[in-house]
Image (cartoon, rainbow, N blue to C red; front, side):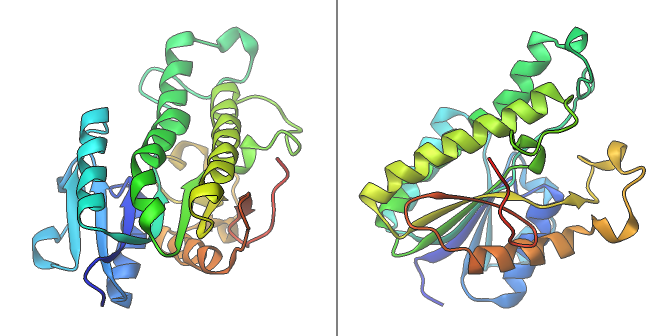
Length: 244
């Protein structure tokens, strides 16, 4: 295990994030940096020295501090996964009609699904520039596809994921000029049995409702196989491309 080689997971308290960290811990290939709003959301942090849990409020200051630390350590980030996302909140649900649009709710959805992942990626850019070969996966969604949208609805969620995909495309084009070894994936994990999808699982066939562990396994597999040169890959859990 190379001391400065590591995998990084943002949104480490999410179902997929926790399952991915556990999977990488068992593999033992390199140390794991698990970033979440509170380290209390992830168990066993003190008993696993190979996993470092970092509490981050995702403010500009906190992200800059973490990024500066990785740069100073000359960290070689091998895999970076951003799991942060939101579908609904206490005061809002996915909109089914134009009449349901609410500016405050839309801002919240875009803040978490679009702006936060891009702010994380921007903060991590200095570390990515110095890494030998980095694969970046950001949780997107199939419903963010404009070409695949045949049902409508879910205005804010769909829009936030579409905007995320566009910004990731821009980032892929930018990063290829400074480090062609950085490969970026906008990833659709399928329907995973987590609190995010819980209210919408009715009607989902059992074989298409994935456990977080299965979702983590699929994500790891797709990350190891996808290959793009200075472009954005938009793939589902089977590794199949999704139209933008």
